[in-house]
Image (cartoon, one colour):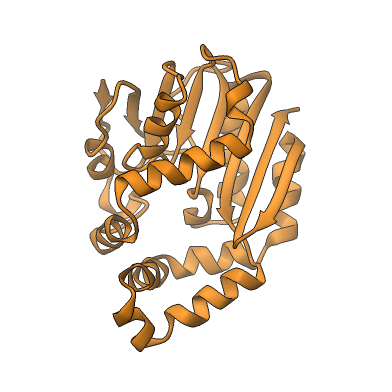
Amino acid sequence: MTSLTTIHASERCCNETWEQAYARFETPEQEVDKFLRRLNWFGASHWPKDARIAELFCGRGNGLLALSRLGFNNLTGVDLSADLLRQYQGTAQTFVCDARDLSLDSESQDIAIVQGGLHHLPDLPMDLDKSLSEAARVLRPGGELVLVEPWDTPFLRAVHKASANPLLRRLWGKLDAFQVLYENEHTTYDNWLSRPDEIRRLIELRFRPVRVRTKWGKLFFIGHRR
């Protein structure tokens, strides 16, 4: 069931151009496969199948579909974009709401997942602190937070250099979509990438790290609520 709350256009995470580029960047099936690989790396095969899992910034819901394929069925998805949530075809309950003020009960979830949403937050560190605080609030004591976010690595810098090349963009549609995504979110994205120490400090203030990796332009983090 989908519960839609009215969100003012200025509060939406992404504009129409961004969402169109997002759709071009990879097909839904490619995104599901990517999420399956990530979840397996995080050890999802060992999570209880009845775990209550909330995916924040869930977009069109392909992360929820990946979780369903792994056998989880107690799922909730949250995103600011009603347009993206309408694309989701699954059994999870979904809500249009702000990750800084979640419409979820305290201590109602076992696992919270964020795959590429925190770098959209407009006001760091305040918005990040609010989002992490809300994630901690809705998790049971000892519950797990799973994060995947952009991170400044040599690989990411090489990708940005390539995507700035018009010829390469014409030759590879995915690279062009990547550049359009960047052009539409560069303010928050660049701000996020410029604050690695501060971001890690805020995350680890509320969540005890269990497994952390920075590779291929991403931060992979799983930790327990303190």
